[in-house]
Image (cartoon, rainbow over all chains, first blue to last red; front, side, top):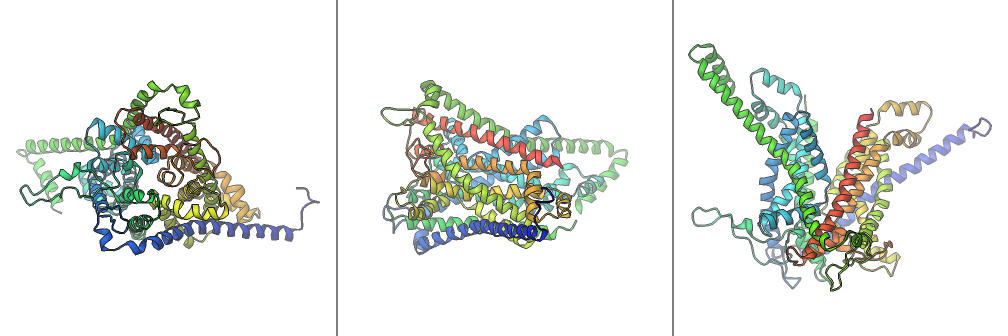
Length: 307
Length: 319
């Protein structure tokens, strides 16, 4: 820009201020679209579904009649699968994170593990479904069962648990470890007496986020043969006869809440839309609550850290 | 407390001549235990490698069976995908087109909105608004995808039909928009991270020259954060391509080779869901076809993920 053609400074400033104001409006609008969508989504679900949610809806099996259908088998299935996912996925994920953060030296093996964790976090969930279909269902012969579903979701959530646990462990200052070593503690003693207890809130946050993701997953479970119409419950885990514990439920066919909702959404006709919305309200309610708890835990953690 | 007493006693025992042997044995036992624990943790960490290898192995082995029947040239050039019909055609193009169109619409929504929102949050907003918005965006990203599918089918498509009255009930536009909103939090969060990693001194230099915030954001911060922002886009593309439930519910089930988002069309992921819902015998060509489709999907997302990963690494190392 040459000196002659330069506009009067005041005009230039005014123009730039207008541009700035416009951009601010634009930015707020984009954020409003995000927030508005969340509100609209929840509003639409509530509007269609709230009248369907009652005790009968929670305690009934699916049915051909929309008004009598319920989600009993779905929430029982979701609960049992979350149990398997938690029992398998959490110890593995936390252990892997401890190894990567505390033990691993910079070798090609560590590098390979890190790259695969990053990659797994980005693999579409339906690919996990294909993995489970090929490996668990057919090669290992575990059938289209609760066990397979739980294992699949455990694998799917592994990267979430690993990444958040590593962040939590990394936040513990190295001086704490050095103090423990100086007193003669071994590495494992240092971990179990100091590092892990101090980072438990962060690890818990990761676990909640992982389970909240798992509970809403649909695609991988469709692939391994979840059914949308199950009118029975898996065998009870507790029995009246010795040994009082039964694991038959692990091999039972299953349905879960998101699958039940998918089944109802994809039925032709309007009848089942209300049911789908009701299942959606419960599903969104659960995931948002879990995420809310995780966000709150993280927020409190940040405020309390005093080192 | 008791542990440290034990440790103290151990130390005393080491000093006594008669306790020396015992203490050495205990130390060896402890070292052995530490080694066992380390080995166990290492195996847990190896699961991620094993999972990646197994994904590739399963997809490849089932796909090899598929490509024994279907020549690769047919797979990439045939314009029909009808593996379950009496006259089967195995051209991936229609599914690929469906995937690209829905993802494309999603990106047209997510990239402009996400970038503007990220610039706003990083450069303009008060820290208070940012503290509120970040969790809200996180919640938006946490809503189950099946619920977004419902939203696309029951809310978005009917609203779009007010604008285009002859828009079919299943179409690629509605789900595409919803996918865009779904990946928006992801794009915002990653590109905001990249912009906040730009050192303050660059901004201060710009302000000192008389630039406004917008000029600083657009001409200094965004260029400096480019590789991180592009990485956010790339990882967003990977998510859009792999998105399943939204398109399975709202985009239709028929493979349809078209680039028009107003038409219905199945995506790769929707096809896998559709076949999986039926009861195909293990080993049949239909069963193998979902693994071949999955392989194409996996190759695409792996490529985007690796590209995005390296771009993110680059922006971290610049400063």
